[in-house]
Image 1 (spheres, rainbow, N blue to C red):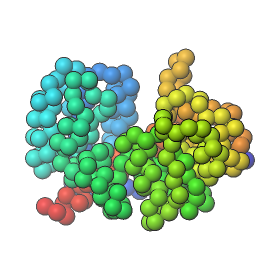
Image 2 (cartoon, one colour; image 1 turned 180 degrees about the vertical axis):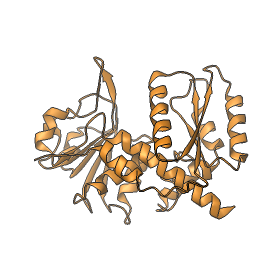
Image 3 (spheres, rainbow, N blue to C red; image 1 turned 90 degrees about the vertical axis):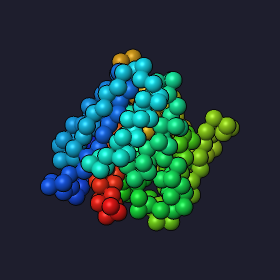
Image 4 (cartoon, rainbow, N blue to C red; image 1 turned 180 degrees about the horizontal axis):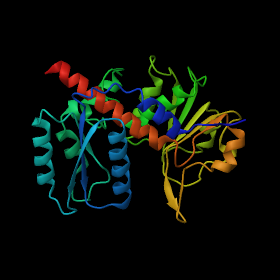
Length: 281
């Protein structure tokens, strides 16, 4: 029987174990530029989860036409604010704002999304003591939560973004995580099915609805679906869930799989940033 990897269940269980100092709780500032419908929804979920688990959150909601210099100035002020432990920029940003400049502007100690080159560089060097990118960390925690046999497996990741695919490939290949052999497929990969078919763990993060069918996976594979697309007023993932589920050992639903785990990892990073900043200052 296929195991349903319920991210909502796992997230709530793990969030309840976060060590939060109620006398001096962690504080995260969520920055939203504009009114992108999905962003409004994601911000609301993050705020709700913060409130439920005693983490302070402040929303800085800026107009769509906010100049890049204005945003950078606001980030600089938050970097200097001792009461702020984490800064998150809700994506996507308007086209006139350079994401790279914004990412580098955030103090690495407060970079709870872990997009800053310093934090990604630490991950590349094998350090997992600091902040870790939220979706990769959430996926790792979800696999661990269900106590699956995941050590030293063949992993295939579809998508090489700096938010998911690339840092995930590094994280899972580390000796002190899964010690996995990782294949990273992308737009330049020809005949990607030859890679997905031999994977013990298949992770798709490309945003192509229901691309992955049962013929793309091996019998008994673990399937993690990061993609999420609105199709005919319904949210669907990269994986054709009903087609693939009978052949998989375990599979995530969309929604309710990786998404809640990403929010858990954000809260985990915020509490970690709070503790590390207290220790360093």
